[in-house]
Amino acid sequence: MGTSLLEVDNIKKYFPINEGKFGRKSGEVKAVDGVSFSINEGETLGLVGESGCGKSTTGRMLMRLIEPTDGRIVFSGKDITNLKTNELRKMRKDIQMVFQDPFASLNPRHTIGRIIEEPMIVHKLYGSKQERQNKVQELLEVVGLNSYHAKRYPHQFSGGQRQRVGIARALAVNPKLIIADEPVSALDVSVQSQVLNLLQDLQKKFSLTFLFIAHDLSVVRHISDRVGVMYLGKLVEIGDSDQIYNHPKHPYTQALLSAVPIPNPNTKSERIILSGDVPSPANPPKGCAFHERCPLAIDKCQSVLPELISLDNGRHVACHLYQNKEESRV
Ligand code: SF4
Image (cartoon, rainbow, N blue to C red; front, side, top):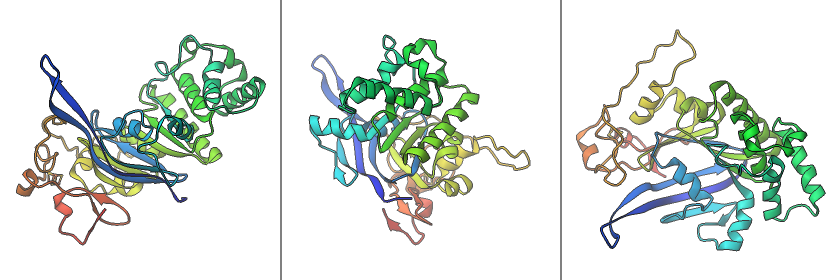
């Protein structure tokens, strides 16, 4: 794995809650509340958690589609947190997104050829229309479609084919980092693995780096080198994929994984049923945000927020059960 491509340092996104006739601010939703991680060149970091945990907001902040409330984002050694319009446009050439719903993210009135060509026009790549069209043909073949598909419209494709178009569009500007936000969750299970295999092949072919956001842990395992688990706007565990899947430390990670079907029927695993719902990020519980649902909570959990601390081999966990071990803060 290469050197660090992306460094995210304590990013936050608080959305104001406005109420009353004059829209006065009455509170805030802490959608992302102090998240830090890094991704190395050529690596895939999976970001998982239940709906509303802040993982998609985190992905969109990295693209600056949502402005962070606080924190710092460094990409390719450059601080991109406060880039202005022109520089931001240049940066977006290097960071591309693949979205969950391929149909909603493709303009239904444009041909597939035009959809894939458009980012090349925006970023002034290639000297002539012919060169751009040649590139479109090449990209269609790279993602497993045919060059004649360029003349067709999004509604003429299946969900899996549309996601291939979305991937071709992201590749059109030769990005370094791809943020894939639930890219297979709208697809049939049989098609999911085809798209995941395609992403892995493209990663090797184009030396891509991925941030792969998903709620389905089995999907993330398939593709990730490392995995970060989010709960209520915070990262609660992050580490090597095998480490996390084989020996999860955080009680929330343990509960999430206990719900994932095991391929080997001889391996027994007890399902951990969590009580209650995810609390509102507008009114998070004091102490550990997970304490109301945690089967292992101790007194301290109700009042003291656990820090993300370093355990074994680069794994970090935010849980009081590990705070007394030999540790160092991130
Ligand atoms: Fe559970 Fe306490 Fe650990 Fe939170 S800090 S996960 S409540 S044991």
